[in-house]
Image (cartoon, rainbow, N blue to C red; front, side):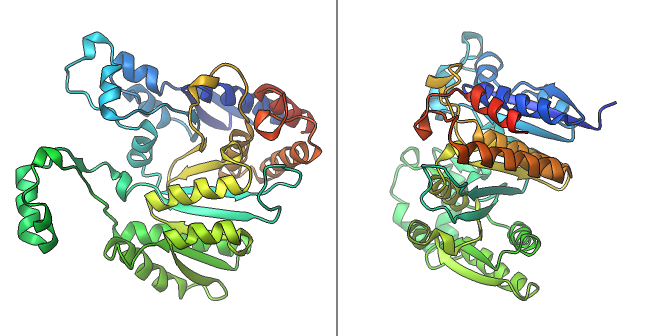
Length: 372
């Protein structure tokens, strides 16, 4: 019997290409694992009306963690139009399967390292080593939205909040409402995770990135809890920055920052900006981590126009594999993989198109495997 059971969720488009690259490296590492493929993505939405079938959820519950490729997502109206004819007019609504996974398995921490590797021609600077902690289950991504706004909800808003009067004459069908809900528990969890990571890995600062001067209640709750938690970590400074200013400072002085922590939407923005500083989404790995389960994925999309061409950079996926190995406690194996990836980047002989090369996804993966 294998030591680990790992679910492989290739998903859509280039998710399949980079998953194949990951398997080349995992085979070379000889991780003692059983790999089980699961169904997820756009094709299952079109054919079954569910991009995350229940059989896949049941499968994940029998595994130690999952490695995920990429998915295609489209707006609500477009998604409905692509359903197979027998599923039309059934009241089905598309909801992102990766967001559903995060919520269903309470994968409350989204961890996104953004590290510059020497020799990468796309680096903004060579001394960037950022780690972003993004709260993964609440905020604007919780999916509590309305369009049109129900009469009962609008009447309640008019009763409870004076600023709602601005919208009292707006037709409800002309209004959409998305909620941004933060809980004290989630704020404390994500900030504590950030400080624990900083303590373990030697970072001197944790920067909480929100917008409490405008979004007073939700951002304010995050900042207030961060100040309390910071008192338990002497030697690690708490910095506070507004999201708009943080974007400017990351472009100007990214080397000044180590661990950043934020809510769902702002954390998403920060991680993509930071990824570009170290070469783009082809280098952007991530882990969705809960108390009992984790899903690791590159943060790029499915790029349908490149599907099956083996053109995209697999480094983000290979670094996600490295994160998965660390999660499983295979530190030595994780370190060897990162060293092999760094060597291939620095050597510069094998590069995909985004780095100015002509090599394929598989050739990059094979170069890393050969280095191992």
